[in-house]
Image 1 (cartoon, rainbow, N blue to C red):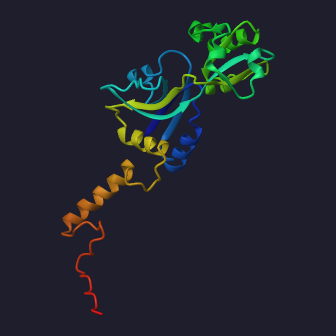
Image 2: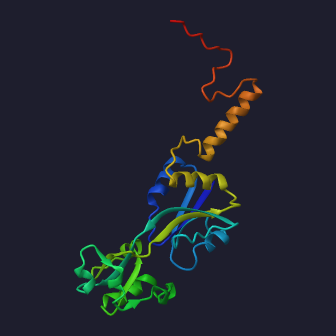
Image 3: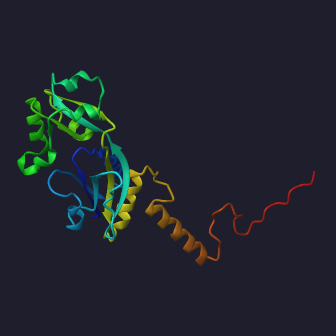
Length: 229
């Protein structure tokens, strides 16, 4: 059975695309898992994933000669703080200059082996520090004793989709990319639709007919002359 293995960065929610693909191509075996530890692009190079949803800084695409990357959307940056912290006094957003006044916890000091974002928010909940992170991560690890506010003029992060240039199942991958980009099942940009059109064109050429496209008259028929008024 053909398969497609999807890996996504924590905070990314690819469920709608996965469900849509599964409905459109039920014959393809799908697997999806969240990636919490280590560089996610290594999942591609190691052959453990066919497609990954990757997070990176805007303008710093990880695209290179071995992999494609298409940017999808940007995430807002938020600051997380304990309840009753000064941050909570701001309704929805807080100026970046105000955030700089607080003791800031560095997420880089909390890799997965040290508890990752969950442990960082445990420290934040104590009230000793605040932490900056993408909104999606703050929501993923939400706690009742921690609040977050959007940082005005914050540093957004980019979410993109990446796959190997030499993917063994490139046609399947391209079908999934099409779903993610919102193409319909009958879009001529979908790999399967292109194949059908090319096959039909070859068949018609072998039969001595011109491919029926571009509004040309059907073989053996001629347009009727217009009547003069």
